[in-house]
Image 1: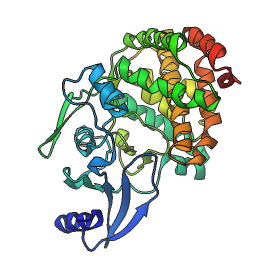
Image 2: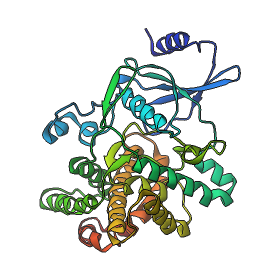
Image 3: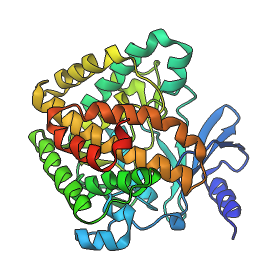
Image 4: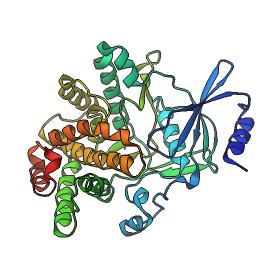
Length: 359
């Protein structure tokens, strides 16, 4: 049976076979989305074919096992497992957060029919109403703080399927930072191997110790203005609609803050950054001091190093050159992260081995 025939069979079983279907523009993933309209009802079809990605990490895998399986397992990504989305969505909605409600699902074939959260992406609303930027970002901060304060099980379940949310360990963090070397540095003709690469690894593993100062919480891992929706008709933290959280891990709370404030796709007003971080700490019950600021800088350096590599990879390997247009913004964020005193050794290493990254 063809994929389209499978979709039609799934929609028929869900009672949506008569719905009008319209493709939603794709992102950088292997998932595909369609918007469905059935009379006055709306829904979103997620098409996440099981064989489209490398495997995720199996239970009990060592770091060596993860390396052998490939990047998804090493970086602890969900890979071809739609149950990750279903299980995390269920835990979020149970706690009052606005993840899409799941109308129907076929985990084996990789289909989900989801609640349609509408058109009001943060990026779109702020572009049309710049005066609302502070209000929306404060609401997003409050939602992140509430997620951080919430208790989530490591093993989650939904409709008979289960998913284990793992920790953002050093192996996963370093695998992502290495994308900077494997793609961004190589884009400048720099091939980093041997002692230089070993030094890079050592510097990062030392930096990651700064993240142990604060308790980990659930990080959605891709929380930014084109992945969250403004739902003003809802109350409190449910006003922020959440998607793209299937890769969630237990991590330092600064990770999603960096994703939000140091957005790769839009410039957040500079005068909002410090107040937003302070607000998060107040709402999350954390001290806003030098240790938190350093953890934020380390997470920022790690995430922005990763994104620089990913954007070159998308442009070169995946033939999506428009991602290069976003690189200058991410590079500026990265250089800003390196100004934290804790990142001095990393900055010095880059000056020696990839000086173009600081120009």
